[in-house]
Each structure stands twice: as structure tokens, then as C-alpha cells.
Length: 73
Image 1 (cartoon, rainbow, N blue to C red):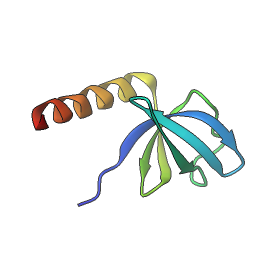
Image 2 (image 1 turned 30 degrees about the horizontal axis):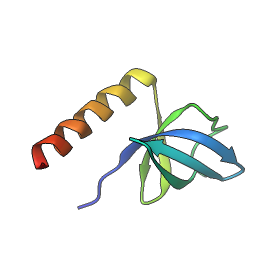
Image 3 (image 1 turned 90 degrees about the vertical axis):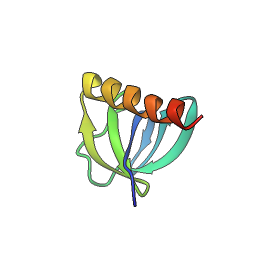
């Protein structure tokens, strides 16, 4: 099973970016996102940003992931 996670882009350099969630930063490819900008939220699957999220969607997704983490503790 594969999961896609929401990340906030903190830097973009061509097709490479750095995304952050919960204080953890990851390298992200942004080949599929037109004109990605730092500060935007994206869904990342297998290291690729596959869709933009608006801030409200990103917060809802982040809260859902937090519920999962809390339940597993």
C-alpha cells in the first residue's frame, strides 16, 4: 500500500524542491506541478509532488495524519 502525504514547499530549484511536514524536510521532485512556489502545499507520492493543495485542504490532511499518528502511539 502506498500513501501520499501533504508537504509545504520550503524551497524550489528547477524540478527539485524541499518539502516540510511536522519539522521533517524531504527532497521532492516537482516535475508535475506547473510553476511551483515556496509556501505552497502539495501532495507527494513516491518523492513526486502530484497535486497542489489549498491551505485549508492541507490543514485538514495534516490533522487527519496527526490523528493516525496519535492512534498508533
